[in-house]
Every structure is written in structure tokens, then in C-alpha cells.
Image 1: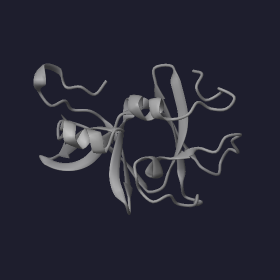
Image 2: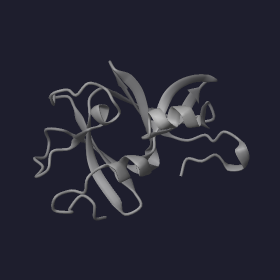
Image 3: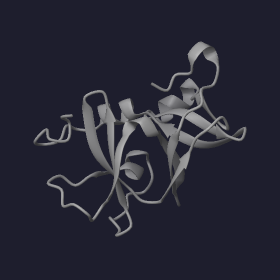
Image 4: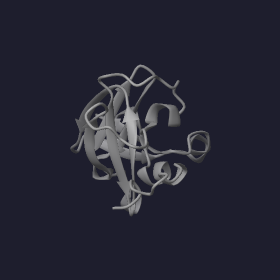
Length: 143
């Protein structure tokens, strides 16, 4: 999904998540919706995206949001804490992560440069969803 074609860095629209523990992004095409974490009670609490990426786990806060992330037929809810921003346009370039870094951060597939500067680690929706356990009732996995 994120692989640049013909070896050239690809541009993409990214939903960025800025937290006190790091900056990450997801391809906008994989984000089905952004919801308030307190808006709708859920049978299964969403998983903490920051904790999945190695940041310290945090207790849910009122201003947290839930991203519904989809890749292929899999869909899951993940909780995020931090500021959301949309980054798009020709200033955004995606560069594949070197194999050494990929082994250390298996959920991250690319580094995004904005204005020529490495700025964000891009989470692979495919790797993220493959790493999560299936929802207990299967409701979130169905499309």
C-alpha cells in the first residue's frame, strides 16, 4: 500500500499523531473514522496505539480519540492520545525504513519527510492489524 513505485519516494496524505512520547502517522486511506473515546460505549475497549508502538501505556483520558483502522477485510479500533493533524501534498515523501530499524519497530514501515526533513514514523495498517488479536465477537473485523 505504501511502497513507492519505481524506487522513487511516494507522496501520501497522512493522519499524524503527536504525543509527548513520539510522533507517528497512519495513511489517511486506512483511517475509516475518528471518534471520541467517550462518545460511544464499546463492548471491547480499543487498544492503545501508543502502547502498541512502545510508548508507556496511559490511562484513557477524556480528550482521547478512537481511530477505526481498516486494511483489506480487517477493521479494528485503536485509542490514541495526542494531537491529530492532516499532512498532505508534494512536501510529504515516504521513505522505506531500513531493515535494521524495521526489525526494531515491526509496525513501522516508512519514515515521512516533510519539507525534506525526517519528521514522522509511518505505521503500516497491514502490520498493525495483523499483530492485533481478533475481536472477541468478530464484529470489528468484519467490514
